[in-house]
Length: 167
Length: 150
Image (cartoon, rainbow over all chains, first blue to last red):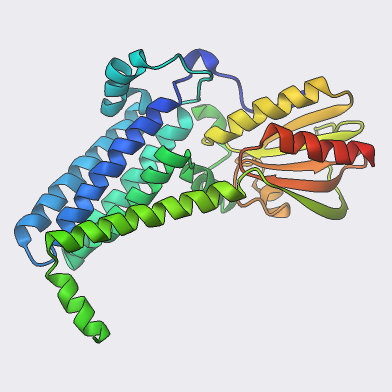
């Protein structure tokens, strides 16, 4: 017997390996951001390159946070090239958690971009490292950062109550 | 070498140093992941004599698997499937999946710091065990047996 507020949505579920593949690409992209930003500490050319890549990453995050992780451009790569070579998934996943994670990624990246203005390249090193660790843990260890952050937001009352409508 | 000196040489970073920093970051993240994984799904025995009662929810006759979830939590869904199945197979054991978003007061009362968090309640509704993170079936079965045997 189960009293459950969440509804099973296997019909619209996604392959859970998709978001982890996406997170792997994101982790690699942020390693590049960090590398460029470190070289950019005393070289404006590298600093600008790091900033451009960070803005590109932020744009991808924003797009998938709004349009849903099912429309993530790297998710398309997974579906077209990777998934046909894999066994079918043993279970499906709700797209809401990984979509929320894209929003978290956008927030961290945009903080780095904004802080680039007063602090320069080091802001992208720090924000890039935070984003890398989250994406890496998600990809390799299936770590769910949103599970912690969303809970904190719910407990202080920022999210919730209206949650039922967006499900 | 003074701290300031380190910061100054940090400014003039060459490709080799960058590679070392990146490797260090990957290593640190890996250690973090291994540490985190070790804590997930482990059961802690709890002796909390306070009785759990949630309005509008009936607990199991012999035991209850009380799960705290949010809708943005992927491991909550897999945990719900395991607990749901165990409750269905075990007589007089109920699985209750509570959305923290709708009841943040309960998350505070039971100091839920991550989702999913699962509490195993005995027949009286007292908390006997606590599992943080995605559950492992064998761990839940072992803890449940202890509660049912008591």
